[in-house]
Length: 277
Image 1 (cartoon, rainbow, N blue to C red):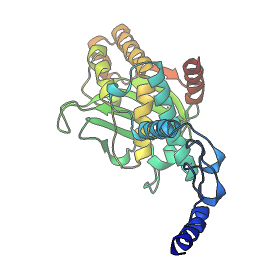
Image 2: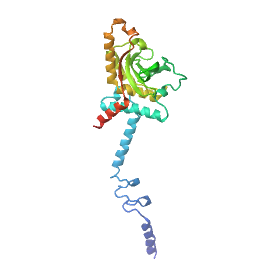
Image 3: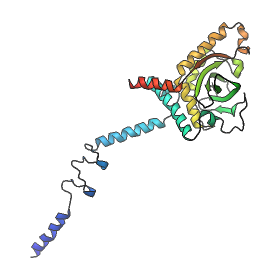
Image 4: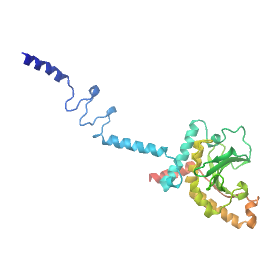
């Protein structure tokens, strides 16, 4: 009797066990060969899920990594990355009711022509990059003002060299790129051979006045590096051909030495199509 009672007690326990070959899952869901996944999605084994998780981690990492010098730029796909970073900065600013221009002037009580914003300029001690914003009155061809971009390759106490000016409209949208004569910014003049290699040094990683503005400027100089290099060469040709001769760098009759109208959205579409193709 004891043996039979013992067997009877065991049988109900066996009936309560729902898992046979690991087929049953919580809530009555079945898992055959571990194919079922939450939400009704299926994978074979766990390899597909792991691959997806790995890709997601890589994509997130790439989004977090900002453009840094020439190491981040190499081919057409990298130009597209620069365009996307510039537009990303604009989108995040827009979500907060801001734009590149408003974020630059956020601490200014008033905006006066020729004054530098922010006061004291913005300088990155690691890269030697420097910039300031100012505007003219009246505005030129819809341009509110421009960012003058420089590099100090020997640090804060070393000589400063002008690279390019980045013009924006009253809504902070990219308008044009241009170069200027030496007297305009009072820099230590370098010809094209000395200036063009410095373009890759312009890398702003500073919180003031806005990290997004600093990354936007960096992305613009990366995206248009080839065009800026040609503007610098054109500057040298204009200076060489000017009748002032050796005094041309201080000739106030000559201010803008080369200029190029640019459209960030249009450039991004072209790069996106090229990348997709």
